[in-house]
Length: 349
Image (tube, rainbow, N blue to C red; front, side):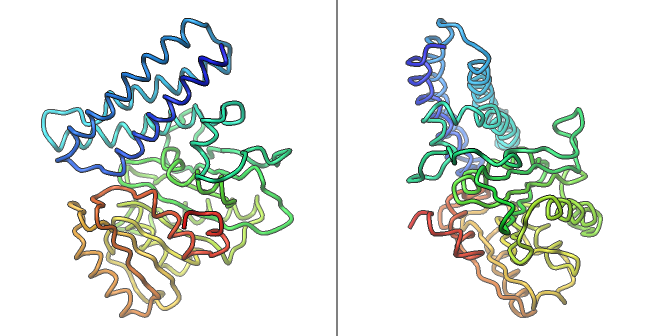
C-alpha cells in the first residue's frame, strides 16, 4: 500500500474511532439521532479516504487496515437504527460489537502506523515499542474454540513490557448484559497498554451474568482467575474486579463472596444485588454512577452504598454529572488511582 495514502487515511480512521468511542460514552435513547448524525459525517470522510487507498492496491498488512475500516463503517451503519427509541438503543448496543472487532483488526498495525499507535495509548505516552516484547505478551482469547463469540471463556491482554521477575496487578473487567468479554477488553486496553497491568475480561456463561444466582457463574470465573494467576506473575494482593451494568452488579455480588480473590471492587452504572453482606467489612469498593442514568437511577446507587457502608465496607461513590447509562472511559484513571496509586503516575492530572 502507498505509505502516504495510508498515513492520510489512518488519521481520518482514528478520528472516526474517537468519535465512535465518544458516542458510546453518551448513549441515551433520546439523543441517538444526534449521535448518529455526527457518526455519519465521520463515515463520509472515511469513505473518501478509503477510495484513495483502494486505488493503490494493498498487501496483507493493508488487508487488516481495510478490514478495520469496513468493520467501523458497519458499526456506524448499525448505530441507532430502529423504528423507536428502544430498538434504536438496542441496535446501538449491537454496534459496539462491531466496534470491538474493528479495534481488534486495527491493534496489530500500531507498530507501523503512528496514528494508530496513539489511539491505543493514553495521551502523552511514548512509543509503543518496548524493545523486544515479552514472548508472553499480547492478546489471547481462551475457551473460544472455533467460535470467537462462544460464552464462558475469557480474553486476556498482557503488556509488551511484561516481566515474570516481578508481580503484576490484575484487572478483571466484566461486560454488561448481552455483552462479551472479547469486546469489553477494549474499554480497558488503552490503560493496560500504557500503564502496565494484566487485563482479563471474562464472558458470562449465559446471555448475562447470573445476578440472581451468584454462584452459577462464580466457579467458572474463579477458575479463570486462578488459571491466569498460575500462568503469569500476578500480585494476588492487587486484583481489581470491575464491571459495567450487569457486570457491575455481578462484580458486587461475586466480589462479596468468600471465595472471591478480588482485593478491590469498582462497579459502574449498576445496582446492589441481593447478596450476603457478611464479607463487606473486608472489602474496598469504589462505585461509579451517572447522575443521568435512566436505567438504574442514581438513588439506587446511593442506597446500595449506604447498605454497604452500614455493613462495614470501605465504600465511596463517584457521581458523574453528565453520564447516563453508559461506560465512562475517563473514569478509568480515577479507578486505577484509587485501586493502586502506583498505576496512576502516568495518567491524566
